[in-house]
Length: 282
Image (tube, helix red, strand yellow):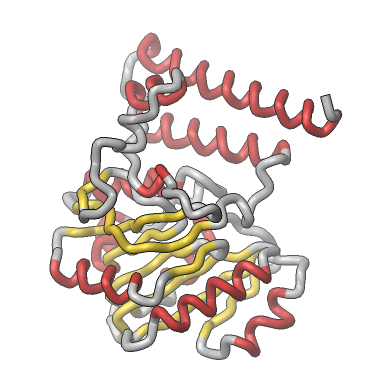
């Protein structure tokens, strides 16, 4: 890998032209003063994304997929082309503050053991998004969260206003050291969507790198790039949880893993029932 730029920004898009437009506008401002490049991988959108935005953002390289190949696979397409020392995986339904990219790159320069970094995510209403800092969903942590005890999973004891080491970085804003990816490998394409950020974070830690939370702001309009009221979302989300669990915890005893697997299936069933009730207006 021959580095030619400081930062490669990769955005995977699917039918979110308006949000992608705002995201690219914020990235354009935030990249001022940084030697960077931008990739947009469009997963066969049926809206007017590819008709309108390439001309508006000529500095971005648009990759048009004929099929929806999934989040992990689309990111890997651009990573293989990226020339940056750092790679930023960024959701299209986000906007970044003007100083966020500059300060994040500076932090990575000053902390060579940092394999990845996430930031302070704000919801659309201005509230802080708890998924800005997360723990690895071990069977114990997962069981606690499913029982309603989410403090450990969201690492709630950490301060919001200081850089902190965390375990899981959100895929909505995931800055990576390119050389770390060279060591641990690209995103696992067994994950179509969801779970790939947890898997990648875990592999960074296992590879000897540190994952960090940085108090740098972005806004995440959560769920705008997915449709959480659809059956497909439920299937893909909980399937991702099972893939992660089987990949990293298959060595544990049957009696230890059975309750967690049962809980995943149960939560999926409850989610499907809730969607059915909404569709029938019950």
